[in-house]
Every structure is written in C-alpha cells, then in structure tokens.
Image (cartoon, rainbow, N blue to C red; front, side):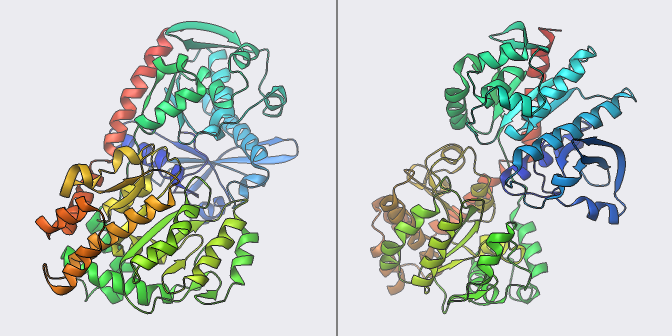
Length: 550
C-alpha cells in the first residue's frame, strides 16, 4: 500500500484513514500487507520508542533518504524519511520534490528487498502522489520478469496536466517500455507512447499503466471515467471506504478523555444525548487544553493565535456558548470543495428561524485557505451567540462533538466518498448532505426511507436549500428532547416547514430517536473487513489482467 498519509504516522484528511485500515483488515485475513508512507517528521518518535528498524539509506541530489520498517504496529509500516520528508506539513510548497524523494526511497527499499528475493504480488497506489512510485516499481520489477498487479486508487481527482518536463523531473525514462492491459488486450509501449495516449492527463497516464483502477463510490466512478476516459472502463471498479467508529466504543473513549462525564452518563441513548450536548456546548468548548487546536501550517497557526475577539480567546481556543440549543457540526479541509462558504451564506436565515441553534465548525486550514478562514472567524464574531470555529485538530473536542450533535452538515460541492458522513452516522447523528458522489449513496434520505433514513439530501451549492433542510432537521431532532404533544413539542412541530418531516413526526413522535438508531445501524454496514473483501476481489481481477500480458 503506497500512501502519502497514514493515520499511524501523520494524516491530513480521509486519505490517511483508508490504506492503513484496508491493510489492517487484510492482515486479519492472513494477507501480508505493508503501508509505505513518508515520515512527515514522525520517524524520531518511532526511533525513540524503539519501534523503527533502519533498512536502507540512499542519497539523491544531496538529499539523504533513510527507509525504516516499523513492524510493531498493525499493519506494519515502511517509513521513508530524511530532509524534505521530515516536514510536518504534508502538502507544502515543495510537494513534488517531496514526492520525488519518497519515490527514490521506495525504489531503494524495493531493491533492498529484492536482495532477499522479496517482492509483492500487489502494489496498491493511492492517489496521484503514488503515480511516480507505481511507474518506477513497474519498470523495476518487469525488467526482472517479475509481474505484480498494480492497482491505482483515486480518492479525489487531481485533474493535473503534465508534459515532458514532468517526466524528466520525476526521473521517468521516456525510452523504457512497459506492458499494459488496454481494452482487454495486451499492449507493449514505451513510456513516451503511453504518455501520448494519456493526452497530457496525469491520472489517465496512471490508469493506462495500472492493471486495475478503483475509486470510492459508484457515483464518483462515473466522474472518474468521464475524466480519464471511458476506454478504461473494463478495468475500473469501486472499493468503498468505511469507518472503524462504533457508538459504544466512542462513548467509552469520550468518557476516558472527559472524566466529568463518567457519573453523568447512564448508557441510554436518549438521556445521555442531552447530557453530552450540554457538556460540550458549555463546558468542553470553554476548556480546551492549551496545546489544542493543532494547526499544521505554522504561518496560519501564528495568525490564529492572535485572534482574541469574543468568542475567541487566542491560540485558536474559544468560549463556550451561553446556553444550550440544537447543535450542528461540520468538519473537513477548508477548501471550496467542502462548502463551508455555503453554510456561512445560510447562517442569517438559519439563526432567524432557529434562534437557539448552535453551530460548531472544525475546518482544517490548508495552503491558500487564509481568506476563507478569515471569513469563518468574522462570521463567528458576528454570530457569536450561535457559531464557534475551532480551526485545526482538537482530539479533546472532536469525537465528543459528534456524540453531542443533533445534525452533521456536509454541503460538499463534490465528494468522492465522504468518510465524515459515516463517522457522523456512527455517532448517532443524521446528516444534511449534498446529493453528490458517495454522500448520495451512504446517506439515506428520510423523505424516501422514513425512520430508516439517516439524513436529508440537498443540491450542492444552494445556500437556500441548505438553510431549509438544516433548520428543519435541527427542529425535527430537537423535538426528541420534549414530551410528545406538549406545548413546547407542538411549537417545534409547527416551526418545521418540510411537510414530510412534520407529518412523519406527527405520526411517530419517537422518529428522531429511530433515525439516530438507523444512523448507527447504517454506519455499521461499512466496515473495513467488508472493504478488504472487496479489495481481494479487485486484486484477483488485476492479477487476471496481468496474466494477459505475462
């Protein structure tokens, strides 16, 4: 498994979850699996803990590269370290240089293993960062008449264009030949010839070289093939993501991190939810540890640290709310894709309709996101009674927020899969999700499924539609905290504009809790063990394609 992120080393987003979790489940099934990933400044920790074994060192253009095996974690990892590979910021300004050094390290490791006659049956590359390594390994092994199956998995299209300078920079030899499978037939071509077939598209080039291509949902496969070419359809499929979040395990973890909750929680979904929400909104938000939130980009962290206008305290920390109300949360990379700006546009109408609404955002700042972050900060200052922004990572708050919330907001403009929706559902939290990519498949719309539903779909990018769906679902879930048909319950019912939601609630006042149970059940259907079974099927198909040209 080649991956530029791993949750066991350093991760940025959902990509860091997938390869190590699939590999871990493959190990359970008796398949020897390793994750190969850059150090991103973490190797010293593994060395100090006595977990890292130095395997090989090499030097490239004055850069020292050292490769370690870390076998005492599950799954075992191969960590490529040295120079740029020690930058904590995973996706910095010199990303392609970092990818090149990563590739050179992988090549050195592969050659070292070949001295022991050790080589893989499968090479599973994840996203475009792995493309140079896929090409390098295929050239290396095939030159020795070794033919592993190469899988290329697209988690998110980069849509990058490349020219001859790219191949030169990545040390990809134009004159070397490769055997590939295209249209169900064997084709042998030089790298130059394959590059010509790729029409300058980085990911089409990888798809041509790979023996099988996968992405993370059926909806996104349509987008992928529309971009890389439908002539690759016969060797393309789906490998769904999953989550290892389970409700009672989350609850135990949160109680360990927040001892105050131990005596307050009774193990009952209904009574516990009220306690968790009040504790999160008033106490926990107000008492983040001094070392949180963690913001990888040091320049952005420096700017955030100076923001101390209410509700901010400085250092990225915030004041808790002044009272308890219906809670919605949102998280993810601060990019246009995720739709934080769409939620901001919906805020004015939302707080007018649901004055007690509490919205907590967990944006992860990325390069170029400073203007968007400033917009979120200014919005939190303006809507200080309703909105909190916690930029970066907060282990103290993150899972607690999921267990405390009434609705998770996923207004993505596009979303290949959306692990965050599974995590929300595993926490018993329904999702207002854009009808796009994996979100269209994992989130079951209450309008169609009733109490077996797990959320509500909206069109991507429509702030008015998001406001209506979010406000109505917040009120729908809020009704669960009141005695059915009481004055307060009737007031909430009359405020819901969505006729289908209000009718469902009127017929079944227990519907909010039934929906929470459906969320937990739906998330459990997406397990890494099931994904590993899908991976094994993909590997068999890839090996079958290899047989056509060996």
